[in-house]
Image 1 (cartoon, rainbow, N blue to C red):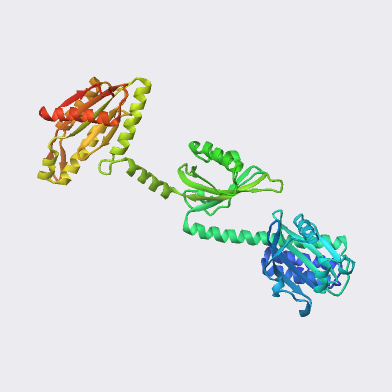
Image 2 (image 1 turned 120 degrees about the vertical axis):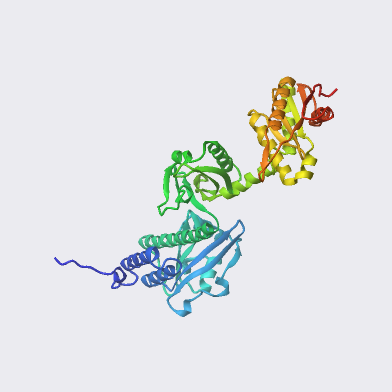
Length: 495
């Protein structure tokens, strides 16, 4: 037996128009065009023409639903095929973008029926007197069928068939076949939306490093494009993960925060955009800062269906934030804590000392004859001396000690859990280290000394200003007694 072959585009051309076989053939040919050929919108125009010829109606049209409120509906007559020029309505003012009141009960019922995804068929001469019959008679429609086009469970628009020649009663089989045509239009809309989103995402990727992601609540799976998880760009497909494995890619310190914020978002105002900064592990085990941006889609039962969005690479932003944070709390020359942060830390230490009854000390020291060093050798040598002093202090500090530059050549230390005797030993160790350690610049070596003042608080209620004043007075005593020495004071509480 010979094998018979043929082209799908020619299949069914011999069928009689108006037959179910011709209608099915037209839908099949249009499905191929919409899914792999012309697509949206050209393929939709061809679909309407194929349906019109197969059914023998006067006009096939699509009304797109733009917006529906409790009182008004906005629609646009976007597509039309007409068997003859006299049936053409596309372009007429009354069929352009329009907003109409929903003030007639029969019109309201019709809209609500379409919103539920229900089809309607009418024979004009059998309709009761009223708005709908008047509307169809004005358009010279003898019979009509409408199929709602549902996209993602929402009424996107209406596919309509007007017959101005026949009083035709559509069969259940024909309605079912034409419902399939409605699904083809739905699919074309979704494909067009996806194409638009892809183009937008490509533009976004040119502006900033980002990837797309989605959590499907039905399957509990996450998928994302590979950009966020690969340290080197890879030509690979989207990555699919279980929710458990997806969460494992997030730094532990950010994981709980993400879950908590996602729960708050889903329980609150979901009209807002979800945003969360977090660190992701890449394929090489490195950490990458990303900003997760997304929104939640609910199903018809108001349950979460999809959580999706983009993940933007924000490493540069985080580096800049860290730089600004450090600048706000550190001295730009030496890199140690600045005066503002020192006073904040000192207030914290006072509160802790009062609450726990613990003892702590504050040391203030400066460089002896620093103005002379600057005037004699220049500010470059002075700056080098300040750096030398800060680095040598850091060598003797403990983990919880705080070193700060609080003036030109004046430095301060907060020493938690430290009495006067211990603070004096630390201060003298720093003094001796500076005196015996020269620093160099441009081949020359320089030596300097420091004077040190100490104030100790033994769990008393006091203020940062009171403690700094006490340590300063001790420092002035050291200056008066010949410099290059350590002087301490106690009893810094409020009388």
